[in-house]
Image (cartoon, rainbow, N blue to C red; front, side, top):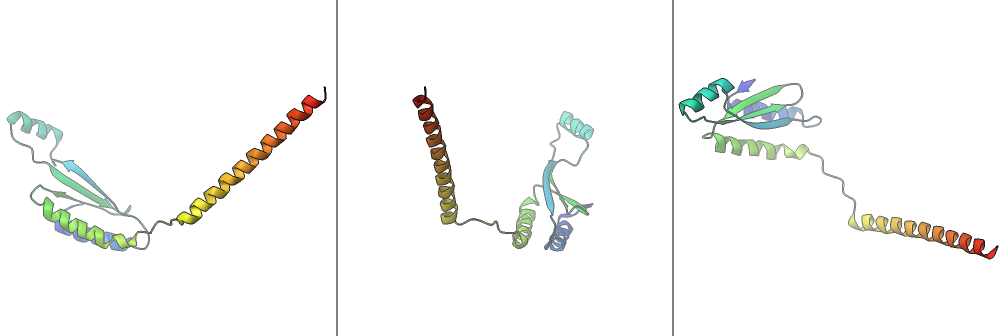
Length: 136
């Protein structure tokens, strides 16, 4: 559904609110002239400049909305869009991080275990070599 920029932003806000607890909203931006390829080719041969617009689509998997924003409206639209994004970023989960001390401590333990295991294997191989040399 192609909407005007303001109703698009209102609908996008409600889409974010519906998916606050669970779900995702995908927003894509694409350069477009909103004209067919044949019409664009005619305009370029006639020497008319093509005004490119930004096609913005949003979907939550069930409902899809879109709008087209020109160069003149771009600044105002971008400011409103960024405000909406910042307001709804609170629903994101924080990444779980390990403590640096624990992570390095665990890494040291693992490397020590590997060294011990390889050291024991070296001792065994040395013992078998020595025993094979003794009994001719």
